[in-house]
Image (cartoon, rainbow over all chains, first blue to last red; front, top):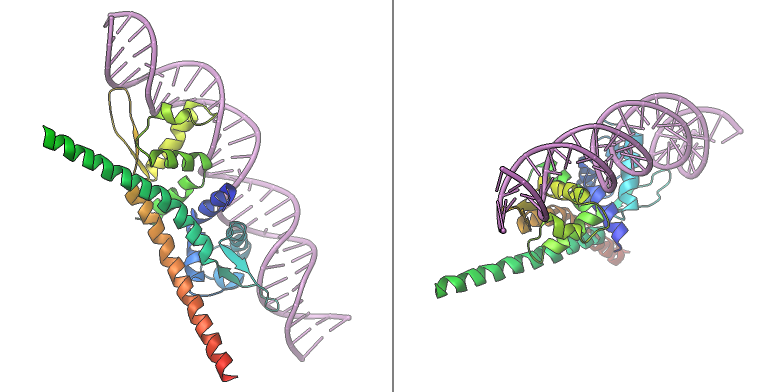
Length: 109
Length: 109
DNA sequence: CGTGTAATCAACCAGTTGGTTGATTACAGG
DNA sequence: CCTGTAATCAACCAACTGGTTGATTACACG
């Protein structure tokens, strides 16, 4: 996952409407119109949100007659948690090392 | 973690400068001036980025003389992965259920 | 072919973001 | 007290975002 993709993916999840769309899609595919029913905004606005999520690689589209259902991509979500966890674990290791150092100093005093 | 905090945290990580700051802080605390050396932008701009990360709860500040070092908060990062993983796992379960259904239909045909 | 529906495109507007420079506050040390 | 340094505040600007409405494309069905 490239740096730009990380930009797009985190930015995509920074909006509550888009997070709600992700939550809904986690239970199965849905069309733009179905998703638009969840919000008090226009269908075009929802279409834009879906475009943001698609560009970020978080969802994919398919074709079923006139309908173009949206599907969530779990692998893209996993890439995000992977990025975060890398640094989180490094930081936690760092804190444990600091704690150990402080314990050692405590014993010596 | 409230909805607004999720907004702020994801938006904070949507910027490559701020992600680099997070990466650097995962190895230990650093001051604004130290962090500013990593980027070709003004110290004030870095100060703004740090304010964004602080408001999002991802980093904390402390006081050491004139210095005000920044520290990464692993718990805040964990809250983010927790949110993502919830829906990722739901989606993966959904796909496994679909696969199972397709297998059943395959057997019956 | 004509009609209805799903969805996007296009233009526009208000508010936010990321950067700049200049001035200001807070603290350490001689 | 005065000087130097760390950091923030304030004002400003160009670019982007999230919303709107109106027009357009793509497909299914009778």
